[in-house]
Length: 322
Image 1 (cartoon, rainbow, N blue to C red):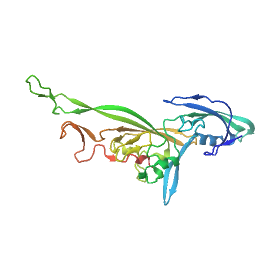
Image 2 (cartoon, helix red, strand yellow):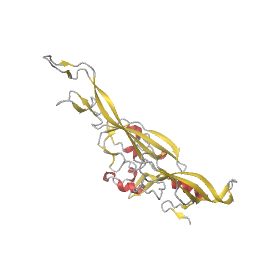
Image 3 (cartoon, rainbow, N blue to C red):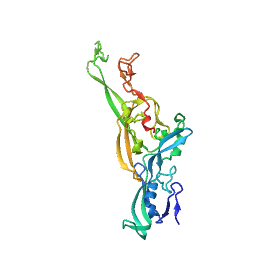
Image 4 (tube, one colour):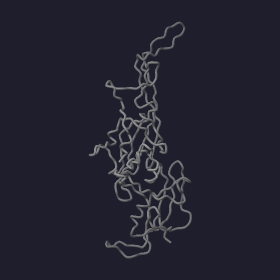
């Protein structure tokens, strides 16, 4: 007897009873599969809904209309629900074959009453949440703005962090001296000296972004794109407490130049996985070691002669807002 997926409105049947193949790897990708029957005539639409896709959408709240990225989330495996076990989501439909012949179509290609396919499910390295789930999690500062659904890294964002270090040079006249002893006076050290500074390189991979929703440069409406924020530090807290990134304090994150990988989604439309590099400075994006700081050596704010900062502050969330 056919079942009906209540979320996607897709009718299907379990084609094969028994335990499917399952492979679990908590530190990599876990996989499982099901063999399902779909209606032959609607198989492309049904499998697209099953695998999920993203598209530009809009919603009107009062007198304001917001654009946002609608996420048609992939079907989750009923035996591996999120929150109880490693969640598995539909990621591949393979080996689809026709079942029960029903003539040919206008192109002379065989038609069938049903399609039998193996649906592969995998774990993801990012959260999958519906539009409504994310909207309910938005902070008060977002003001109920649907166009900010992707600005807090609450879904479809993979985070990769890597510790790194760099050497900051100190000039020869740094005030450092060689140790005195045996009646000898302290002698100034004239060698070039370095201070090690520690950072975290953060790679944010924004998954499945419809091309029309990605702003690389400022658009015709004057909305700034990712390239406009290269070399800028965050003027607002970056992230969300419930995100995989957490929250980075104000002016501790510097953005680099993004790259994108293009592909077609199951609905046939183009999307991109956008990778944006950031660098997290624990002491502050514009703070560097100063050997002659009043009160003793330490980190101090670095400015240009005109008073501007080396990494000017801007709201790095803006490119994610529709």
